[in-house]
Image (cartoon, rainbow, N blue to C red; front, side, top):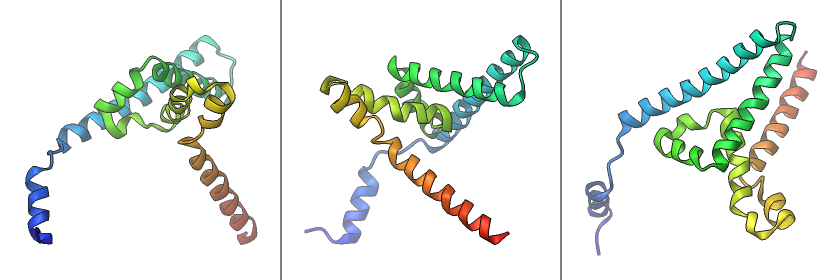
Length: 146
């Protein structure tokens, strides 16, 4: 039987090496490109609809980015992007769309209600719950702290 130190040495020698520098650079570039695409969409909306307020532009921009994240997930492109970019592909708005659409597609064969509707929020559900509870607590503390 191997001792603990011998086992740690064995694992460190045989574990695959992660290309840390390439992964970090790819995440930075892809995440930045996703953000630039979002800003570009916002700028195009501002050019087309000159009378639209900044708040309305942000709403439309968010909707378009969610649609694009969902579309690329449905086409199987977002998974390839995530494999290449790692953490750079989980930009909040498109990454969230991906986390909702992926389980829905995976459990599609189980039917609309028991598959898609029941499993759609398996990844994103805990994040939504934590966000709602945390925002309530912060608001509650902020209300009484003032």
